[in-house]
Image (cartoon, rainbow, N blue to C red; front, side, top):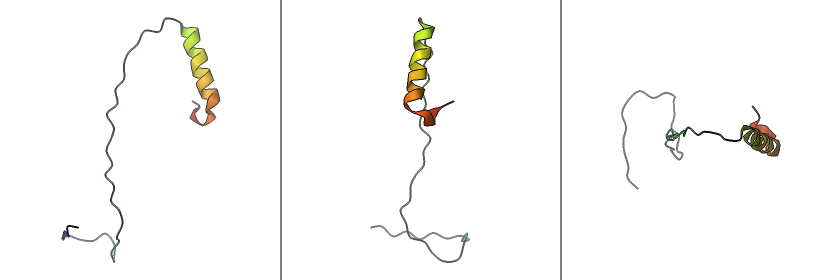
Length: 57
């Protein structure tokens, strides 16, 4: 384990020891597609939303 000392003004009194996590934004890739059968896509969407109502619009 490597010990590291940081200097600066503390945000609160005392110390805390815990795991640190690095938050990164994922790279989102959006592809444009041409939909041939719109009604079939709407039915697919309805079926998906029906299977998981928590993801409703």
